[in-house]
Length: 112
Length: 115
Image (tube, one colour):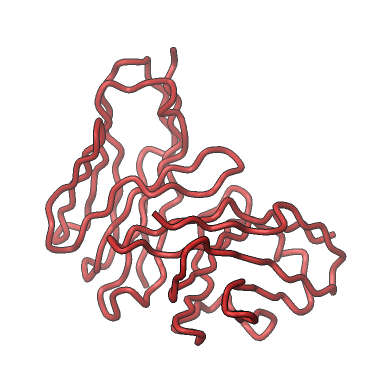
């Protein structure tokens, strides 16, 4: 089973600031996903990333968001200018060989 | 647009009871369906995955069924234990591009097992 580590576990930022959330898979994976969960709401798909390219993105994933794999290992989600409504738990996920999706423990982002 | 609904939103039962959680989805053209468990403040743990061609999957005390044509899935938990207390989420993956599609989640069933 793949393991996914996310850093930081909590991030507090001021509105308008840039944040970078990080995801580190333990094993070598090509497929990554970012999801978010606003408090009390459904888990929502943001973007899928395959072989260093965006495979699919949701309508939530606008120009304020970007993803990259800067060093071939870490996988990052950047929010350029945070808004209050970006406050949420952000999850990184990667599939196992049996297609089950394995999630990291998440980064709780609070925008003040 | 795919919509996933889970009923009930919350459930509280005494330890030892068997229980059923329900999930329905509006677009039957799915690739697979997964049931997840989420503990407070934690990530999601995949419990069972059912491919669109399958009818059910079992793991220990858990059994998930899928009726794709009617857009329904159930998660059956046998002999419930206090450690089963969590939120259970149902999620479907669209059928058009298989592994590239993001999951569409339901809001979950918050389950409490009373000791």
